[in-house]
Every structure is written in C-alpha cells, then in structure tokens.
Length: 211
Image 1 (cartoon, rainbow, N blue to C red):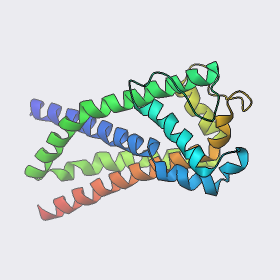
Image 2 (cartoon, helix red, strand yellow):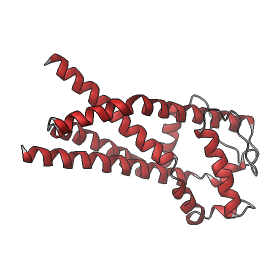
Image 3 (tube, one colour):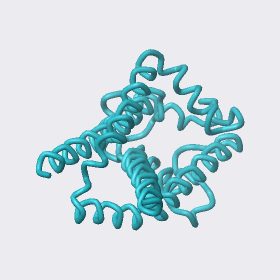
C-alpha cells in the first residue's frame, strides 16, 4: 500500500506538471492568437510595417525564444537594446525550463494514465482535479479585477530586475506586444487549463458510475 500510494502521488505530480507545461507550450506558441491581435488591437498603427513584415519579426522573436541553439536575438525591423536583450534572454530560459519539465514528465505521465485506464481508476482524478480547477478560476478573477497589478506581480515573481519595463524608444517592439495581448494569452492559458481539468473530472465521474 505504501508503494502504491507513493506511485500514485508521484504519478499525480507528473500529470499536473505535464498538464501545466502543455498548457504553457500551447499558449506561448499560439501564433493564430497573435495574428488575430494584429487586427483586433490595431498593432499596425504603431509601426511602419505591413502585417506580413510584422509577423516575420514575431516569428524571428519566437524562433529565438524557442530554439535552444539560437543565442542571439536579431529582428529585421526592430532594434534590440541591451536591456531588452537581457529580458528576452531571461524569457528564453523560462521557455527552456518549461520544455525541460515537459520532456521529463511526459513519458511517466503517459504510463501513469495508461495504468489508471487499465485499472479503472480514472475516478481518482476527480478530487485533485476539482481542487486544481479552482486555481485558474481564482487567478482569472484576480487578473480581471486588475490586470496591471497582476502583470507586475507576475514579473516580480519570475524576474529579479526591471529589464521587462521596455522603453518604446530603444525597444519599439514593445509597441506591438501590448499588455492587452498578454492578458489575452493568460485568458487562453487559464481557459485551456480549466478545460483539461473539467474533462478529467468528467471522465473520472463517468468511470466511477460504471464501477
């Protein structure tokens, strides 16, 4: 029983880490969202670029953040200050940490889920998923009550400097990465997380009814 409980606890930890990193991965790479934001937020009004040119620069930025061996950030149409380069480097390290956790947990999580299915124990997800499902709801409420404070708090948590406070003069790319865009990214992420957790609860209850 001791080993079984330990296995379940480790399996649940791996599962939650996988879910969180998958949600983060999907959210930070949500290219269609940024394409939508270009028009929705009128981002082209802030730059002397076509949509195609702006999206090229966006892909260059994401390529730098996503590809481990890309060590220098070069954007075709935007200068990058030393402070801006430092912040994007720190963001890149967070991207790499997220991907590393995902790679480490994905196989154990798959094996754990297969075992739950084989042993008809998906119902064991219901309670922890119910508790976890409150997290995106609470964070989403806090965020919508005052996104400015939430945004500052987020950066204070993950960064130990003020390099994220971009100057539009030296780093004009901030004009096309407005705070509202990041708010929509958080909404997407919280929404995806909530959806996955609710699906887990649904299938867990369905399994319980069949026992």
